[in-house]
Each structure stands twice: as structure tokens, then as C-alpha cells.
Amino acid sequence: EAILRFSGASTCLLTSPDLHSARERIQINGQLISKIDFIRLANKLLDDPVTSDWSYFEMMTVLGWWAAHDFQSDWQILEVGLGGRLDPTNAVLKKEASVITAIDLEHTEILGSTIEKIALEKAGIIERSSHLVLAAMNTSAHDSIRNKSKLSSEYIHDIVNECAVISRTVSLDKQVITLRTPEHLYKDLTFLLLGEHQLENICSGIRTVEIAWREVNGTKLPKRAVFEGLASLTIPGRFEVLSQSPLIITDGLHTPLAAKRFSESLKELNITKNLYPSL
Image (tube, rainbow, N blue to C red):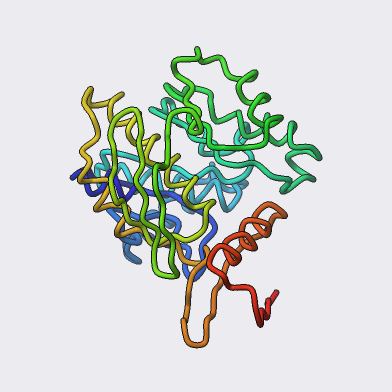
């Protein structure tokens, strides 16, 4: 979303969950939807009897789509709620690109008890997608998704094959990398998100936008938008440094893989002594 916004396009970003306000789930051009617009659209939904048995997530998704329509957003960036196959976000008629990041055991009572079953549920987002981007992930998950996909190989993009991190430096303040993709060489690309897992996510995000941009505009994504967009990017609750003295870090991890990645990030930054985790 940040990259597309800094390219000059108007955006609507739908995410979940929220930390402080439900309005965080719907952002127009990088800003939370206003209270007035949220109330107006919520009342419009609640007044329609067809929504009487809808779930909260279904209501919020449609509210976000109405906001995108009202504000004439050029791009919609949708985070799937749960799984993918039966997710409300899957109702969109066309997706320029879908991206699936690392898969772990989560919500097993709904999505399935194995990585393969969860991967197949998440593969549901491929429907009506022009391209599919796959981040680095468990081999069984990767194979399940590729086997499920009806896209030809030229429309499936493996980040591990298409992107190469040539150099990387890390501190408590930022990461700086030089990244090569099929479109560009990004030298000294700086972003504030910490942890090697966020490096993987950044690569997936950049490649996804490159593909979607070319699909729509027929040209290469402007490099400037990548540098400026990522420099502005923060994600509250994801290895967020609240204070450096004393050092306080918060992370909303909720899976074994996320806990492993958090631990790896601490070690990479040489934060290994006097740790006091809080649950």
C-alpha cells in the first residue's frame, strides 16, 4: 500500500485485527477512515436487513469496499481474514496479484490440523488472480499451493528464485539492504521493520507491487515509490521498539513460527541477556 501510495496512486488498505480502533482496519491513502465516514457507512450497512446475520468481519470488509468506492481508490490492498477459500475478501471479481507468506499451524480447529491442509485453505485466494507470489515457506506448504493453483508457471512467482538480497545491515533502528528483483536493483533500500522475517515480507511486498503495477500499467514500477514508501512504513505491534532505555519491545506473535522468528530477531541484534518476556 505504501509503495503504491508513493507512486501517486490513491489507495484503500483493509487489514485486521486492530490494536486501538476499528477504524485502523480501513485506511484511505494511508490515513484511518474518518469517524464521520465510518459511522455513515456502518449505519448504511446496519440499516440493510440483508446484513442481519453477517459476521463482524464480513461487515467490516464490505464497509471497506464502500469506502474504496466512495473515495475512488485506484488500488485496493486486502489482507485476508482467516484462511482464504471461504474468506469474505475472496468475493472480489479480479485480483491483479495474490501473495501468500509463510504458513504455520494456526486456527487449526477451522483451517485443519496440518500444514498441508492450512496451505490448501490459503490457496483459495488464488481464484480470479492474474498472478501468484509465494514467499519462502515450508516445502509441503509450497508444493500444496502450487499443485492447487491453475495458473501456468509463468504467472507463479517464487520469491526465493526471483529476488536476491545482495547486502544487509541491521540495527535497532532500521534495516538497510541492496535487493535485486527482475525489475530493478534497489541499492541501500532502508526500512524500519526489524527481523529477518520482515526482510522476507518486504521482498514479497515489493515483488507483488512490481507485478501488479506492470499488469495494470504495462511499465516498470517507479523505483522512487519503493524507497519512499518503505522508508515511511511502520507496523505497530510487530517487533515494535517502544523504548531503548530501558529496552522495551512488543510483538503480537501468536504462532510457534512467529515465536521462533521473534527469538531469532533478538539474537541477531545481540539482545540475549536479562530478558523478561510478558504474556
